[in-house]
Image 1 (tube, helix red, strand yellow):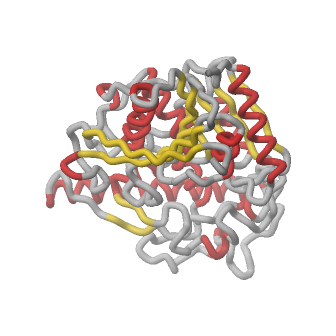
Image 2 (image 1 turned 135 degrees about the vertical axis):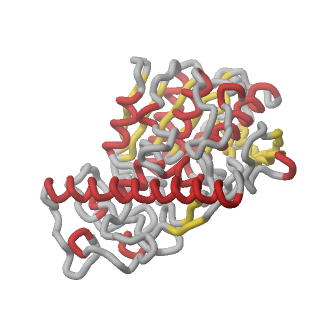
Length: 386
């Protein structure tokens, strides 16, 4: 209890429904998941579940601060820990559903709140919308993954914290449109290369130039989607239904917002992205969406095919809190506003934390404000009583 709460490691397992199984499904379709329960001494009937599609959040500042403040939190992990190269969002929804059910049936919490931090925001909306009114029976690749028969248990509320609209939209807004040949990443159009020397434009970028830049990013995403669809179709015809192909996506950190603070303005530091210098990260091994498979691309990264789009999943029936960090260079104000606007009922709140960066790194005051804001909202909505 040195942190002000007990940290309880958990492992659960469930059998995946019949369908196309990936290498992350465990042995003979047995999916094994791990989590940390951050459990304060005072009892509570409410559990906040933090889950990212691939991230491990046990030691991030916000869940720890909330637990230290008396909120019971579960930092849950999907079957894709720290590796999204083969990630299928529909399978992540099944994993989150397993944790929600475990929280109610095994851990004994009467109320569950989804803590959608960063990439977990669109996941939370995607899950809740399918738990309330399931519609999906197949992945965008056409593989069986029947969420209508999965018995997903709805949460009682959703929090969208420093969140973006979706993985697909985020990657599209970060794609380098100067890449003209996916097979030859060195073949680039200097007219659209943010990091060319000399650059094609200088901040503040003209509005028409930005609009064309964005259109070219969408066009590139669609070219990769076409490649994924055509490749998967060919592999299925020649190698069978389970055939798959992995590939590399170069140039995935080229958002004009990182160089021009007048675009989607907030208090972020120009020339930086959440991973460091975007010029270096654009083609580094650690860039967003660098490694993919045909099925994974269609499910999580495709601008047109992904089902996990927060803007399309806002028709839910539970209270929603949306919190933006005002110096965030990963999830900027337009994403925060689009998430808020996507929620189609009035029981929602939109708040912002001045000066806060994406991770609250070295920001104890902003972290404390976030903890107090979230804790206050939970209390007002009747979550957290013993």
